Length: 184
Image (cartoon, rainbow, N blue to C red):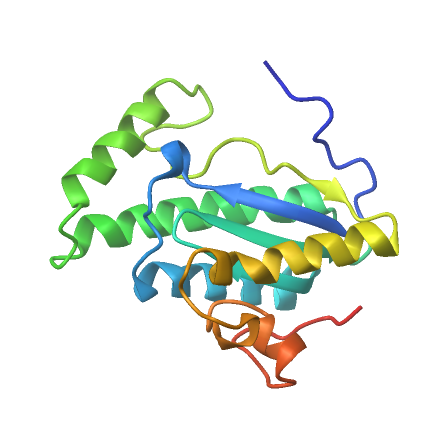
């Protein structure tokens, strides 16, 4: 069943987006996989019209607060991002000799891909992005706080600004993080 409530209607508005790995597999625990996401987000910023206002990469999901520059469409950027990162991360998992969870993860991604007619082999990301338009300052601030508190609540760091794979250091420490931020 398609969730009609979660749809990007205004393609250039600021949205809170979530990408979740199928079956919530903790596939993003290794820096090599997180770095693929970072590099892809930077590519989307420089080549595809993506504005990144805040971000965090967790072990099994990614949160973004983002928008698209005209004439680009946020839906198109996110589709291309998911397609590229999905195949690139699966490829890295396949060839990584240190990946102790390789067989198990690839089996899950293959099974998920078999039941989805949009995929040829594997499915890495869940289908929906759960976009939420940040149409008010209150909604934006709530989502920003939630996004940056993720690594703290997961017990990875004690302070939002200490997590490398997040815009927390940009917002809380006034230091440049891995990705250029389009501040709000």
